[in-house]
Amino acid sequence: MWRSMVGLSWKVPKWIFELLSWGKSFKNNPLLGNSFLNRCGLHVIRVILAHLLFRFRLLLLSPLVPSEDRREFIRNGFLLKKNFLSQAEFQRLTKELIELKAPVREVIEGTTITQRVFMDSTERAKTPNFQRLYSHKGLDRLMRYCSSKNRPPLFYIENLCNHANVTPRPDPQRDLHADTFHPCVKAWLYIDDSSDTNGSFVYVPGSHRLTWKRLKWEYRQSLEACKKGADRAPGRYWDGSFRVSAPELAEMGFKVEKLSVPKNTLIIGNVYGFHCRGRALQKSHRMTVWMQARDNPFNPLFTPFPRSTALLFEWIWKKALRKIDSRKTEGGEQSNYFGTFNRAKSVMASKILESE
Image (cartoon, rainbow, N blue to C red):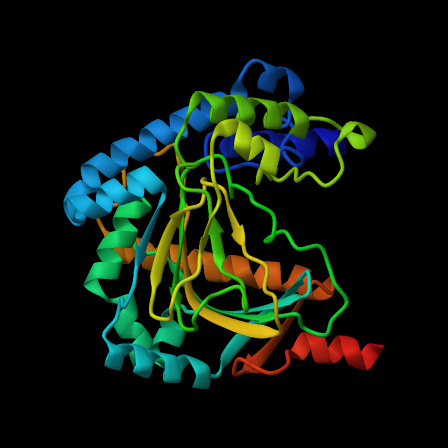
């Protein structure tokens, strides 16, 4: 009894903090997953409040970017900029990333091996061309605006190995979904061309906006997510990253768009809008500079110190990654190694094949 009381004494404040911040798991937080509270509109209220504050911060940050970029981002939910870097800059960056030796994290999603390197200040110090991209004034202003948080994002290098010779696992990236209940951004600078061969980014323009139909869908999803055990519909996600079906998209009046783009294209997407990784038709690779910015959606203000705040977030996330790495490697979900991106066959794939 005392143990349970002690456990609750720190869990309850944690659940309340998550309720008032970016918490989204209906399974792990009994407040967020409470059926009665969600029937009363808890989830929908959080969605509406987060969106109102997001638009307020965008308004305050509007001087950062040209009006045409602001209109396109607010209208469609994404920005697409081809030939983002000069040809010479892009070639130097590509060569540097392909030759980069760094700590690589590998996970299997479906039949895709996803390899990532977290580009913190230590890794950037080894890569002068990447550091120039990190300091790129245009990219910096776009990400500070689109995130509504006025700070640079976290940077990764991501290399996808499609149709790897591995035992397939569930792939959460192939189904159209919203990342969370509030607006936040991810971005990709494509080092390779993207097409049906290696899987294009798929987005549903306009699905980031709060329409009455979208709010009704959010309400229904929140009630479904509260169900327990056998009452839960199969194939659904309970971490707050809701999946959407084709009939549901049609009911909301949305159409899917496949963004097949050439190398050196920058895409910035509001991932509250529905999106997914397109299916690759052939054994192939796709490398990008991958960026993400996510913060407390209920903070009405943003940092006045972009660089310092970014370095603080980077330090915190690096410490968190160590714990995540330990848990995932022990569970066999992830493999880590130091070296270059293997554009032929992954380390994890090799280990699996050897064990078989």
